[in-house]
Length: 173
Image: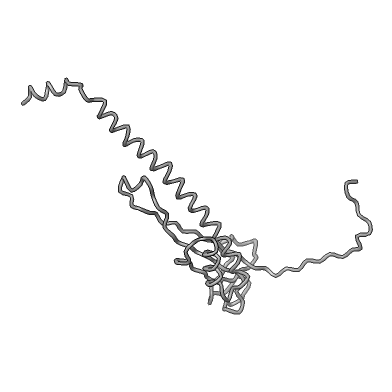
C-alpha cells in the first residue's frame, strides 16, 4: 500500500486538470463578488430613488401617506408590498442631530408640542424587497438578498417675498 502511495505521489499526470478546477472555482468566486455585489448595489440605488420620491410625494399628503407612497412605488415599477409610511413631527433644531429632530405620535417634541395626527409635518418611508443573486447561489448563499431603503421628508411652511421695482438692474456690469 505504501508503495502505491509513493508511486501516486510522484505521478504528475493530470495535475493541470486539478489546477484548472481550482482556477474555475476561484473565477466563480470573483464573479460572485463582482457581479452579485454590483447587481445588489444597482438594485439598492434604484429602490432608494423610488423611496425618496415616495417620501417627497407622501409628505405633501400626510393623511394619505401610505396610499401615496404605494402609488409612487407602483408608478416606478416596484411592488407596493412591504412599504411602511409613518407620519412624524419635525422640529428644525440645529442643536439636535438630524435623527433627533423627528418625533412620532404620542411623543413630546423638543419644542414642547405633543405630537398627534393634527400636527404631522414629515413622513418616513421604509421599503423592503428582494434582489436576485446570480453566482452567490452556486456557493449556497441563496437565490436572493434583502434590500431595505429608508427616506424621510419634512414639509416646512416658509414664505418668501421680494419687494422692489426692478427698474434699475445691474447685470454683467
